[in-house]
Image (tube, rainbow, N blue to C red; front, top):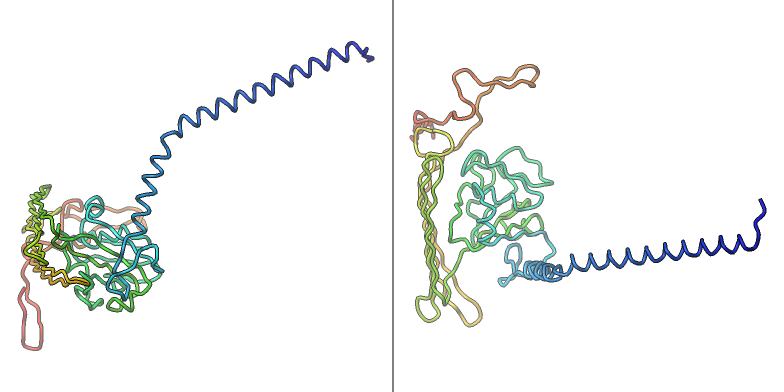
Length: 328
């Protein structure tokens, strides 16, 4: 087919118009997208600034666990893995027990279905079957119960949370074996609230299923020039999540601190009394069939509400030594 010069010129003009229209449409589309993106991202700087301030405050926090200096180091300067949680963060996490706090720590798993005590805490890289042989629990840097191998009584079983706790610092690995009591897995250190120039106090009442009744109280303030104090604790009683025929959790705790401000530091004396009795929920009997694919209830036992704990097992007598018995 032969085209004349006039037809070629007309064809090129048509192509130029099409190209110009396409470029114009693309430019308008980019402008609209940029405007829409600016409209959406306009409030973003305020959010990012707030988030940045929170992160900066977190990494600038001074920690005292796992360091040799009395004044501690900043988290950003520490060469080991440490997780901190303030009083507000602990309340938001709503731990069912002291061991359940470990759910906030990466690389640590706590199996705390037995109740307030007798938990199993597993730390990544440290194989263990039960209890928490590689974890130590401290208060103000002092071990609560140093031996890690006593069956059914790991460190967290001897500690109770209340409103006297300011924060917790969990050191995973690192210098745990040097500045703790020899547990290489993790060190959980609880720091108490201390009195300040401004008096403060709280009263909290908690109720729930299982006839739960709990009262928490705390007060702190200035005693005299250079002297500060705090006192607090809790009392609770509950039948528990399963009917044990007696109060599953029944007890109280009282903690007090006395602080003296010095020219180059401070001296703090603290005391804690814990008298708390707790039921330990064991596994329930079930029937397995079909190579474990079918699980059914044991005759006469309700797996959803029943428990092997009962009034008949509340008191027992064991042989403590040859010719000597111990009744509990």
